Image 1 (cartoon, rainbow, N blue to C red):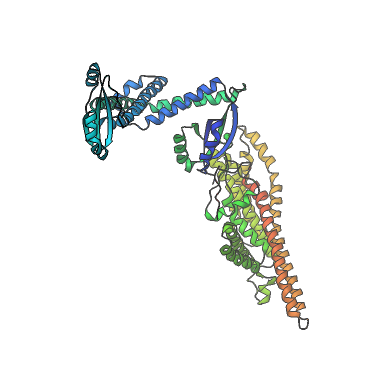
Image 2: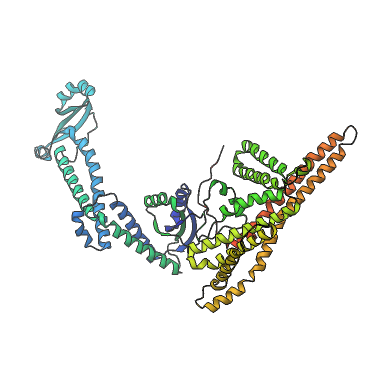
Length: 596
């Protein structure tokens, strides 16, 4: 299946793009396409207002809602709400900064007690100037007697092994004190705490005001989305010269739907300007495949052709079992399949980095054991002839018809898938013509089984299937409302029968490659056994011929068995299943893991 994608349109200043992409790269889930557009006054203004809305929405999302007071905010326009929220939060930020400074000032002021400026002013009128000092308790004790004899000293406070004191300077006398004068706080502890209480009260009022606007963040988000659409529309038609030597980076990003919440959280944290929508085929989104463990092994084979379009069916799960069995049919030898299976199993322990490819080789080896069981081929020998067993294994003619039967089964299966896919995507009436072709092919297969195998199938049932299928093809080919036009198109479409016969004959290559590999193996055995009759060294020469010869046949047969089923898949199966392709694979921006 194809994973649904979410489309993001992001707008960034070009100078910020590299740093943003580096942070985005760490997520490893975003497929990004980028283009640059010139900045002018209008685009810069729109981008600035979008960023303001982002910041306001992020702010309001952190506050609980006050539903009682919501009516006050709901009467305002989005732009008024934005201005009010910004004004309140600017004041709140300023008060927070002032509060942090007050806490430091209170810590400095506390040891000096609740002093005021009035006593200092009174002393100055008496031509007395106070000086304030802080000394360690030991230092003050050592010099206290001398200082108190020479100066007028007043101890204000003792705290944490420190002495806070004042020295009075008398006018007209020379003054010098051996300590550096302390900076007196701007206000007393009581005054500062009163200011702190006022700040806390005002911050509480602001937060309650913001709660009134918390329910309006959806209106702000809608306003922001309108601005983003205006910016996108403006940039799409703008060809003016850039101002200030700067440009905007317009990023189109695609995210798999299961990872969308992670990306949204990242963009909200970055306060990025973005518009989010469900991706459609018109957006040309990348294709990410999601298959089960078995089908996922065959995705590299499908990638050798082209990825599906975003809006069509991923057929990897449908061709993978056929491919495995076709590979075995073309290899045509159980011995080679066993070597491939054992070799891939051993290599998985030695080459862990190639584990997916080796697992695929294991399944191909299993297919190369299953299919040759029908003919009994084993290292160029026929087990039926070797053990003189009759009626257990199929002869060459039967293998020829088995290849045709396998091809018919895959074509019918492809037509059935196309029928169901068309009905599911566009409505039941859109798949009726393909349903008719499916019934015609089934009827042809039943007729062949009755003629060649002698199966007792009722003729009336096959006639009924033929009539129904032919009616659907003749009257439901094309979407015209005119029944005569549809009938004419149905008559013309019957020419496709020749194409189906051509597709069916292509599957003869399954028998041809398998038979060719068996013949080459038989030749290697014959030559090797002949060389073993040479005196003395015959066993060595014959053994080398058998080993080297079968390795060569295995390599050559495996190459053909890999390529020709791929051709049957990409031409016959893809055509009959309605595959168009032309998509591009999902390639997220991510950091490479470096393994030691």
